[in-house]
Length: 187
View 1 (tube, rainbow, N blue to C red):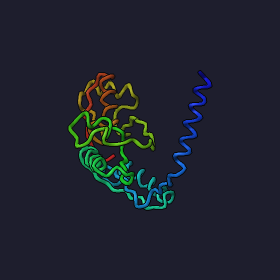
View 2: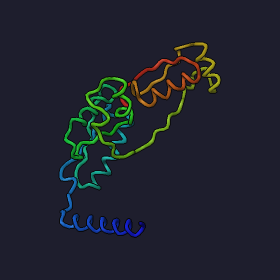
View 3: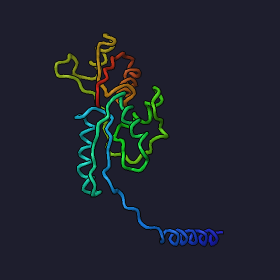
View 4: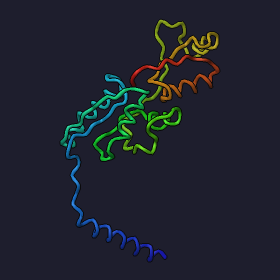
């Protein structure tokens, strides 16, 4: 059985080489690539995309242009890319929540299946920081204050359904506190 499998594998490999020998290599890219950032200009995601583009255009030999299409917590830009021709020239640079979570929270003009994940570019760990003027200096003091003042503590995120929003709501639930979510434009 092992010899049969080995012979079959060798034949399949040989056929792959024979069939691919006549195929001409495809040159890519042959025109500029657009990276769509679905948030406001100047935020962390926009800055990351611009840094990536500055290196990518040298590598590809074609301009790589970053365009911001903010709105709907990333849905406007994601929908734009989902409607674009799937030829690799229009890319979405966003946090995963725009594609993975948002379509399940609200009706969006795109679904997870309309976009193809390409690669993970960065990782942004979540941290909890407070202003130096706040009365609490430890996590225990923070939790005690939040329990005594339900809803008085506010936190910001790039919008509903983002990983920061979900992480903070999970934290509040686990800690038995009520926090007030303040969504900001951009990410």
